[in-house]
Image 1 (cartoon, helix red, strand yellow):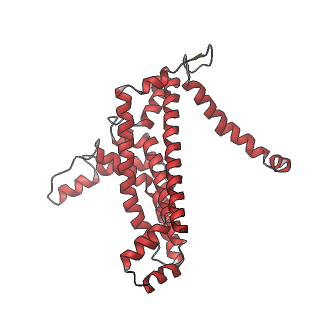
Image 2 (tube, one colour):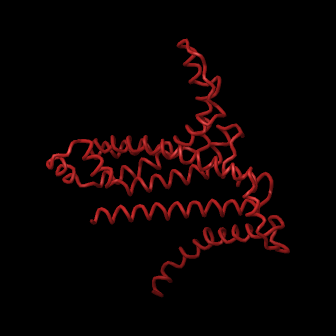
Image 3 (cartoon, one colour):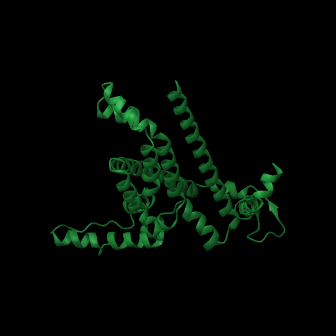
Length: 277
């Protein structure tokens, strides 16, 4: 044990510096008042009580709603895409997954500006609609624009874990299902989908957590009209300078993430128990 700790000491030190210490500071700020200078610390619960105000509860509600909608659409698109990719040969699958991950190599800000150039009133989509005799459509600064930005940004995080789970399924199990008289839908639902649930859970968790905590996409595609949890935290730290309240919101977001992880793990364990039976 001592040898293990000694061998991994550099990693433990870096983990404390970049993970544990910042988290402890956020916890400290969330329970104190007096600004971003830790002088004359006064412990208080006012930062958490403030979150209960209607305006901030509305932000939380809006964030969770958009997060759930983006997750459902991403799951439908992501599972379909992942399943189609697994129908190709191994080499083609690697190439297609690489194609899915390529957008992740580009900065989120640049990808968001690309969507602005596409969906703006004078953008490429409206110019195309006008050229074929259709009326232009107002898309920017709407729920649709924000959702499109969220889904396009989070989709790879849904596709990759689901594809990995489906690819690991033993093909002999699928063949056995057909031999026992199951049709295509029964085989998909009872074998493929059920055995890919771990990938679905991972994809749902990553997509949901990223969608409710992002602030660049709602800020640009929503035109400043959409204040989600990520935007609220950014505003408190950068614009307002209220680090204490911003830290309290961050703690609430962390709790939501932690609860979500626990629920998904519990669901995964129940699925494994059913499979064992």
